[in-house]
Image (cartoon, rainbow, N blue to C red):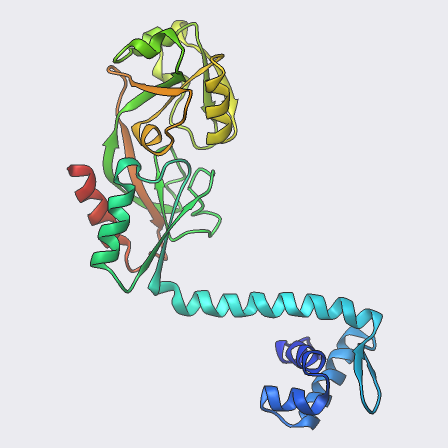
Length: 283
């Protein structure tokens, strides 16, 4: 006999209600069915799970351990059902660093007005697909390269590149910079989700590049003045910090902003999200 969720539900109901008869009432089954399910569970596991007297039911040592795991498994099963049945009433949009920058708040407001039946959730996950490959979201805002074999995408807009630096850096007094000026500086970049690569410079004029792991680490290191960074303008909007300033790079190529989704299982609201973000970036 295989382990079944009904076996686990009976164990939890017996312990929580304090007896077999109350567990039967809670589950809407007969007391005999509760006894059979518990016996089946003990048979599958090969251990006794409950001490039973005429007045009390208490877990054995093995029963305490199984009970904890049973609660976890039942909660996961309930979450699975909830997600499967409510998937079309929620849209999870993942992003690695900065959502959609200065359009983020307007995106949330307009979405709520136009699609009140679909709750919008923004999720920050520092992976190349913004959590899409990991199953953490339904759509993702992506600015770096990604595996196009698994996903479809649409470009919803473009963003300028900015140079981030400490506020006491000599460059902080400038209105803008050029890429060639970064030669000789230490440049921090995120190798997993970043949009900055050595290809922005000729082979003989590249800055010293150091990897970082996350936006917070990136900002903290730049604030010391030891290094600078290049990032989309959305980062400058989302992460205004004391000790950090951002200046546009006037000769750097624009960064395409893509909305990415699973090719064979798109969320029904995918095209609505693409249309709204395209509209916002076009402004």
